[in-house]
Amino acid sequence: PASVQKLLLAATMLPRLDPTEVVTITAGDLDIEPGSSAVGLVAGGRYRVETLWLGLLLRSGNEVANALARLGGGADGMAGGLRAMNEQAQLLGAYQTHAATPSGLDGPGQFTSAYDLALIARACFDDEHFRRYVATREADIPAQPKQRTKGFTIDNDNQLLYRYPGALGGKTGYTDLARHTYVGAAERNGRRLVVTLLGADVIDKRGWQQGAALLDWGFALPRDASVGVLVRPGATTASAPPSTMPPQALPGGASGGEATGRHPLAHPIRSASYVLLAVGLTVGVGALIGRRRRLRTAGRAPTSRG
Image 1 (cartoon, rainbow, N blue to C red):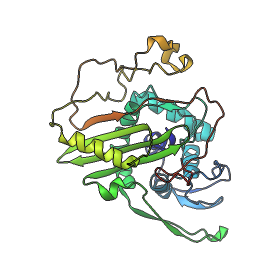
Image 2: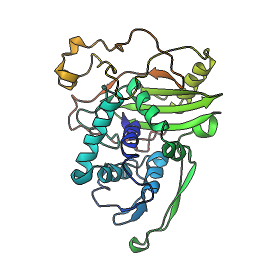
Image 3: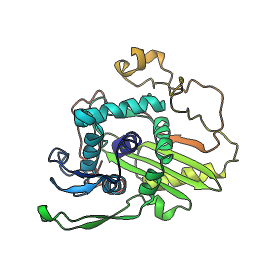
């Protein structure tokens, strides 16, 4: 998933954490892959939870992801946060998703699918706080006098917000294993579309531009057109495991041969508020245990990111 994993973190932790609470960043939170995406928080620094959300969604801070997972994980810290993320994925019907890291940095057994990311994005955009955070263009990170650090301003790196009429926001991501990933949403005339891309490469268009092209296609379709089904949270029928998923990762231990990769609902169901535009294959890194790669900003290869 790369940094689009942070949407699952948001869907899980937004209801758990008070945005007005002031929390302390630990040295463990800053234990991220060298060169990977970071906002610039400091150990011992005290920040409002709302500031952490802005750092996560505007600048994809991996140290922020660690902090939010730890804070929402209760007594078990980050391990509890990861467990909660995976439980939330199951609740949403995202059975093709497993989180091994809160940030999207590559980890053993971590995978997702374009369909599942649309489910997760829908849950995120249902939250009014998320909608405000992800649409914020600039935010201030306060100074930390005890650590002798000055305050600074961060801006939103999702170009869809600036260049696409009706854009609601989204999330970019990149790792060497995942390649470019992207989730974006837009709304026009009361019609909301979500687009997800996995395993994309930037050749002549960046991720947000590929997403914009798919959104254009979706908005050009008749309003009652259906290109897929988004199950509701808690539904007994959810996304079918892909045939490429390792057998031990399948629900109930099913073998790969039993998975068709097709959604079990064969007939189209039209959603009043969302149409799914899903492109890409399931990303599976279970066979690459322990292999983590440096991250780079989508479309700007020299910079690492999550």
